[in-house]
Structures are given as C-alpha cells and as structure tokens.
Length: 262
Image (spheres, rainbow, N blue to C red):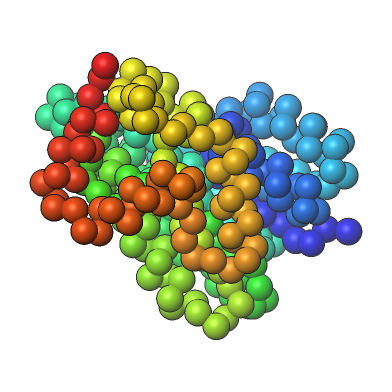
C-alpha cells in the first residue's frame, strides 16, 4: 500500500531520477515532471514494474512562465494529492554576464527560482492540511558564495537556500520538513548543459565529484529525518564552514578559479 505521493521535478536524469528511485523503493507513488517524454516513459515502466507503485507523468518546461500553474492544474485534474514536493529542476551556464544572452538568464531565473517558489506556494497548503510530508529544494554549495562566470546561477541558488531555510523556520513544529539539499560538483548532465565540463571544479587534483545516487540518498535520508539542511560530502561541508570565516574577496577568487577552464 502506498505511503503517499511525491512530485519530483527534473526527474528524467541525475539527482531527480535517483530521488525518484528512493521514494519508489519506500512505497511512494510518484508524479514525475520533466521535458523529455521518452525518458519519463522508460522510467515510469521501470519503476512501476520494479516497485509495484503508480507513476504519473507531466511533460512540462518549468523555465516558461505559467508552467507552475499548469502543473498544479494537471495534478488537480488527475485527482492526485502531493505529500512530498521535490523542486530539483534547474540549470546553469558558464560564461561572463555581458557575453551571455539575456534569454538564458531569464529562463534560468524562471526555473531555478520563480517556478520553484510558485510550486511551493501552490502545493504547500495541501501538505499543511495533512500535517505531514515535506518539501525538498535542491540548492547547491554555490548558494553559500558569489560565483564569477556563473553570477546568475550562484545567485539563484543563494535564493533557494535562503528561501528554504526561512520557510523551514516558519513551519517548525507543524510536522512538515523543508530540506535544502546542497550538493557540490556531482556527476550528472549539469556540467555538460552548463558548458563547464572542462572547468577546474570538475578537473583539479582536489576535486570531489560525487555520484548522483549518493547525493540523492544523503538528501532523502535527511528529509525523512526532518533535517533542514544537507551539505553532501566531507570536503563540501569543510568548505562551507570555511566560507563563514574567509574574506569575501578570497572566496570570490576561489570561485572564479574553480569556474575557469583548464
């Protein structure tokens, strides 16, 4: 018997796909959302056969205005109820601010911040009514610092982190968890999409690129334990702590170095 339903955005690959597997293994039905229908259909078949759960699909591009409202309407029309909302979808782009098309930043801000906020606002009241469940917003270690060459992406993740932690405080004692998942460099499609495969953050002697399954597991475990913040990996935790006492200019120089290409 199903424990409830989890809505996961960006579910066709990477961390979103791995989180889908974890919810499915724990007997949650799924609403999987992404742009690539072919991949979602394959995932649906696999998870339904493997875990005997129900998987519903929504094909949507959350980088477009009004998409969050369209998702909410689609869920209501199917008579589904969301117990866990996972805002995982997001993308970045490596490049100087003035050399990047404004359209890229507009889509990035819509996806990483606006749609995330709208989905949370739309689905949270129903979750509150049942006084159980939660929200996971996938932020990043990038949210703890400014990021030259990825200025808008880093700023968007700072928003996600700040928003999620504030919301967690507002919901304290209600039985609802709001978790901020903050991975560092992770082996997903993100680097290729952001055109940063050759950047030092993924290619340096101290690089600790984690696999998506491990990142998802750490976040999932903390979400179910009621924890509000998950920084994945020992090196990432050490870095985040060091940022608290490091001069801002030093932090920016480090971030710039990590974004530069080899």
